[in-house]
Length: 316
Image (cartoon, one colour):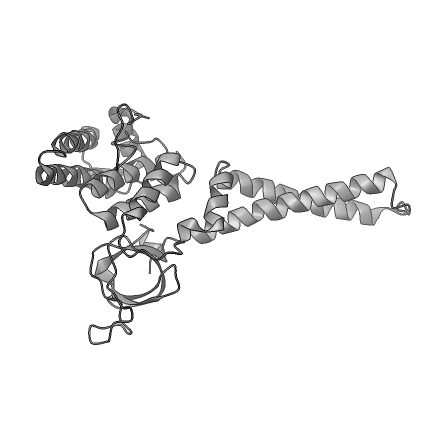
């Protein structure tokens, strides 16, 4: 448990593949009861009592979420409208737990599954992105996010998830960002010490082929590679995690305009679909100027989008 409002235990999986659920694919990583107790323990006392009055209320919410999701899966083939209602009910139970202040990758992942099943593509992708920020190396989150993105109509062809950085990130995310940062700092310190030690020698070896000089050069190069390489991955992660600027269009038919008002002409040839991701470049009351992955953009109503960051301090 890293902080007072961060729970590292994973929630029960409601479905690992939103398009083709497989038998035995839930992989329950923590019991519902244990998760509920950890959620209450992680919250400050006042917030816990305000949002979830007793530990058993969180337990009941999670159980109802799982029950509604199961019911939705059973109804999906024959009664799709009833199934959608069950998936929405499951999402509502999970949102109640998330709204209490808990930052948990498993909860966001399950919420994304329920919302995508219910047809809320924008909300589902937003939940997956939040889950990925909390657990960037989780393959199930990455797989379901990738699948949900394929369902977005009119998605820019050069979307960020296909970039070289994202492909490389799947490798370095195996090592936690704090570990990479600590190793990078250590490498920089080693680099400085090696340079200082070499400079302090009264009579450094003049022979460029001497063993001591070769060992020193090898140590300098190794420290530099580790420091720059791992430091670069940390910087890339910090930039990518700027959730106050990354967002998702939550509803279909959103018109991107040339200015912050309904009286301005449309900026793009077609309205934006739910699930389109963007980067916010400016905000004005009730409006957000966005940039899409292909470089296009415009002004959209703030009510029609959601931001990956759930921290109010970072979203202003």
